[in-house]
Image 1 (cartoon, rainbow, N blue to C red):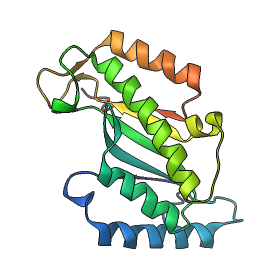
Image 2 (image 1 turned 180 degrees about the vertical axis):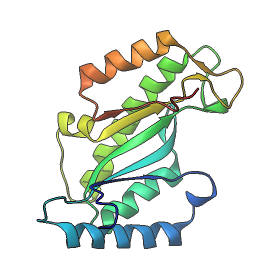
Image 3 (image 1 turned 60 degrees about the vertical axis):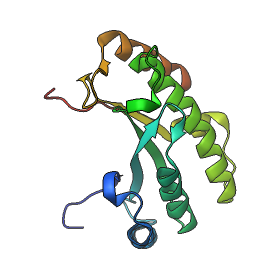
Amino acid sequence: DRYDLSVLDFVIDGAALPDKAANARRAKVVAQLQRERAGKEKPVTVWLTLPVTPKGLTPDATAAVATMLAAGVDLAGVNIMTMDYGESKTPNQSMGQAALSALDATHRQLGVLFRQAGTELGESALWDKLGATPMIGQNDVTPEVFTLADAHVVNEYAHERGIGRLSMWSLNR
């Protein structure tokens, strides 16, 4: 109420991601907040921003989504950090190609996670619940560089699929 928020985006990575107890507490509180704000002028929309590989969400990231859904959180979507792949990206794969692979894999994973939580979503609805945030330019992992050509590929793909969110890390890069 103090900040008049209507959207929350939780970036969960690093040491926080495998902390099951913290993830469960977070999910419980977020679900409670959504229930309290339901039917009000500004309900609370929730996104999770999570690490990914070209093969999709990591096991800990998958568990974080499942924990939120099991707690009753109405997830607006999952925003994947399409960056810093390290050894999970093949040397001949461009950053744009790696992002597209990650998006496809995460799309499939979200379908399974929502279905397991009792919500069947169609292809279009699943794409709308998916976001991507590449790190533009030089990534933290050498030699990963997200180029303008990569940005064009990801942007075109996002428009074709109807991806719910497309961002970049970060404006001052």
